[in-house]
Image 1 (cartoon, rainbow, N blue to C red):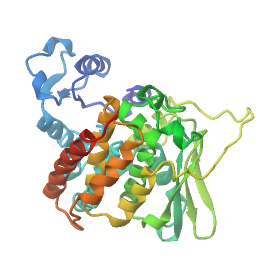
Image 2 (cartoon, rainbow, N blue to C red; image 1 turned 30 degrees about the vertical axis):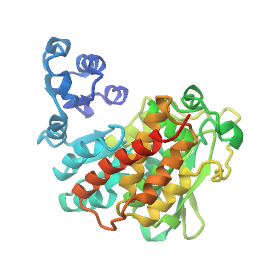
Image 3 (tube, one colour; image 1 turned 90 degrees about the vertical axis):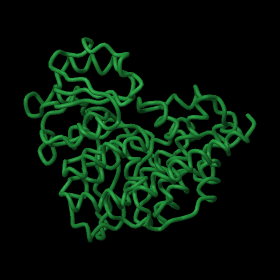
Image 4 (cartoon, rainbow, N blue to C red; image 1 turned 120 degrees about the vertical axis):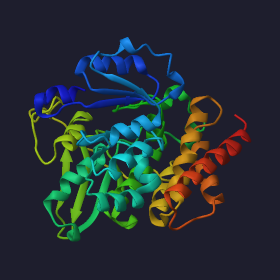
Length: 369
């Protein structure tokens, strides 16, 4: 909303959607007066007062209304920011309709990356990354030919536990895991950052977004979160994108590409003294990262299963029903027990998503905390 306000009349907000937090959605409707607002939770129909929204805003309900909004003929670009696999439905509708899609929902690419990329090629849809790391790669790739890329390096803040011991990680509480040192995010993504599963999912997303092999992707820990990622070319040149840790810049970059306008995000202070630190991730203590590289190598049905297992495991941890270190263990167990399909259809991916969620519930229910 801050980005749109800062851009003035360059962009018009046609519609907005949320799942159940209708009061915030209503406040946003008064701020920018979109033509449509969608509450995807159909159980709230009849409970939300229509007059809470701006008079110019039509209120709709249900996931189908999200897809209808994302594919509407008057919409040019869709910002897909729904958390989890739930974001696939609206994103697919937007890509199918040939819209430019600014992707902040990495799970869409994790679950159905090759299918989404193929659909975008057929419809002419542009896939524009919003994750700060993938936005950085997207920008850095403009410096050379794709054939000349040696590797990309995703940076990670390391989360709140990068210097903890194994014994300390065994007793992590929800409150500790929700205190991210750099970014203010929702609870699910914050826990993913603490386990490094967020980085694992970003590895998978990078593979499909940028047509890379798994061995062309690396991860380094960068606690300052100033360098958002690198691209290394065959001649040894390394191109990095740098900015303060603030999501307004990558959001605006996706919404206005290839043009660049003044942005409300903070700027780097080059008069100050500061340093940049880089180190290897501690993969022995954060096994989620290895799961990401494994899934990136195998492809097929693995992404859908890993993502679904992680969503359930994180939810169980947030509810106090699972230990922190059991999150990647649950994902490993469910991933190993599924019947691998190298070329699944969308319907098969959705079936496996449901299966993996139930399997993870069964696995986590058997653990004592």
